[in-house]
Amino acid sequence: MAEKEWACNDCTFLNQSISLCCEICGRIKNNSTADSTIDLVSDSDSDVTTIDEELAAAIALSLGNPDVKNDTKSTLNSSTRSTSSSSINVSNMTSSTSVSNNSTSTGGDFLAQRKQMEQERLKRLEKNKHQDDETHSGEFQMSSKRARLNQSSGEKMRYLGGTVKLNIINGFSRDGYVSFDDIVKKEDLHMCILTAFQIDDEWLLQKLPRNKPICIVRHGKEEDKNLADKILKPLYGSKSEHVFPFLKSSSFYSGCMHCKIMVLKYTGFLRVVIGSANLVPYDWELIENIVYVQDFLPNGNVLQPTDSNTNETSQFKKDLCDLLIEMEVPKEFYKELDNYDFADVEVSLVASRPGQFKGQDAEKWGLCRLSNVIRGFGSASKDRNVECLSSSLGGLPTKFVWQMYRASCGEIPDAKPPSEYPAKLKILFPTENTVKNSTLGVDGGGVIFFSEDGWRKCPKDLFHNPESKRSRVLMHAKTILSEPSASSGNPADKKCWFYCGSHNFTKSAWGEMINNPKNDVSKRQITVNNWEVGVVMQLDRVTAALTPYKRPVNKYLESDKAWIGRES
Image 1 (cartoon, rainbow, N blue to C red):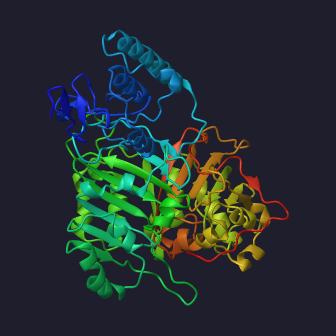
Image 2: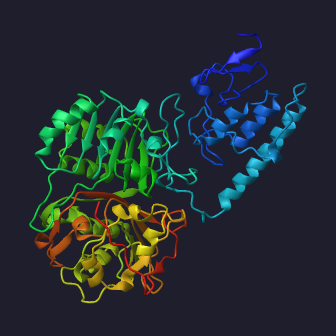
Image 3: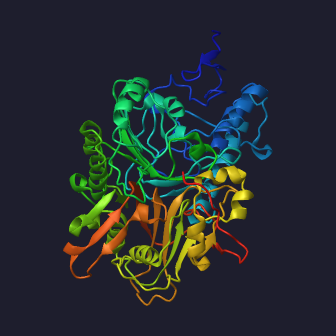
C-alpha cells in the first residue's frame, strides 16, 4: 500500500492520505475506533451527534477526493439509506452543493463550503422544529424520555420512544418506510419470538440465524406439533421451538392464531414489534401493513430516568408476558423480558384469545380490554367519531357494531344495544373498483375478505372507501382511530386515540358480549374465537402522518360495492 493511501476499516477501500473520510462508505479516518462512529439522524435535534448527508458529502468532495466511478455512485444511489453509524449516503447531492474536485491546494474553499452547508442545515432544522407534520413518510414517532447509547457494532437502537411504521413496497419510495430486514438483523440476532397466521418457511429461513434460540408461534392444530418436531426443528435448528396455541372450534367457525408479534434480542437491547404483517414476503413487499416497534434498554442501564420507576410492574410487559404464557411459549423465551426496562412504554397492549370468559377474566380480552384501556385514558364518552380500517369483515349485526362503538368510546359494551347502527362509526373497506384498479389488480384482493351475505345484510351508510397515501396500493393494515365529536359536551373529552395491530373488524377477533349486567362485573361474559394483539396510544391530536390512508375518507357511492374475496 502506498504511503499516501489508507485503508478503510469498514469497506477496505484505499483512500488518499488527504481524505479525512472514506470515499466509498464515509468512514472517518482515525483507525475506526468505537468512539469515532457517526450517528446519522437527518435534520434531527436528538441528543446524539448528527451529520447531514449533504454536509458529509461536501466535506469529502471539498478535500479533493478523486472522482468516484459511475458504477460506485450508482450502487450508493440505489441503496436503502442506512442508519448505521458508519454510513454516509451521498445520493442527495445537488448542483447547488457541488464543489470543485481541484481544490486540493488550500482548505479555504473547503471551509467556506462547510460553513455554508452547516448554515443551510441549521436553517432546515429550525424550520422543521416549528413545522407541523402534515406529510406522510411511512412513520409516526412517539417521544422518548431516554438518551441514546452510542453502540460500536451490530444492530443499533433506533426506536427507543416507540414508532408506528409502514412497510416498504416494491416500486415506491423507501424513505421513512421499513422492511423486514430493517427490523430483523439476522447477523446480530441472539434470540427471537415470532408469531403469525401465515408463514413462508422457505423465505423465513433465509432471514434467521441457525442454532440460535428461536420460538415460532403458528396457526395450526395441536397434532401439528409432532409434524413440526420432525420437519421444522431440523430446518430451524435444535434450539428452535414451534408452538401451536389452543384454538376454539365450533360447528360454525374454527378460530385462528392471528397475532403478529416479534420479540428480538440484540446486543444491548430488546426490540418488540406488534403489527399486521404475516411472515411472508407478500405482506412485506407488495401490500401495505403497519407495525409498532420499540427498543428497550437492559435493567440498570437507563441513561436518563423516566417519571416512573415501575419497571417490575410495567403493565405492558406484564400483558405481553401473560399473552405469551397463554400461548404456551416456553418460559426460557418469555422470561427474557424480565431483563429489560419497560418503564418508558406509552402504549397499552390489547389482546384477544379464544374462549368464553366471565367476570374479571372477561375484562382482559377483546373489546372489553379495549374499553378498559380507553377508560384508563380518561377518554370515555358516549359521543366520538370512530374510523375502523379492516382487511377482513365477517357478519356485521347491529349488536356487534354497537358493542365495538361503545368499547371505542370507553363505555361498557352492552349485550342489548339499540336496533339502529351507530351513526358516528365508519367502516373503512375497499370497493370492488378499488381492488380492480390497484397495483396488484384482482389478484391482490386475495388477502381482503368479505362475504356476499354480509354485504347484502349490512347498511351501506357505514362503508367508506380508504385510499392509501401510496397511490393504488391495497392495505392489509388494521387500525382504529377515535376522535372527540364536535358535538361532544364533555370538556375533558379532547384527546384522540389510535389502535394498530392484527384485529380485523370482526366478532371472531374482538369477541362479543353475551351477558353484561352493568352493575355486576362477576356476571359479565364474552366469547372470543381468535388470538389477536395490537397496541393503543393516546394522542393530543391526529396528524396526517398517523394513518396509512388519506383523510377524510369518502363514503361509498350509490354504485359502489364492497370487494368480495376469499379469507386469508
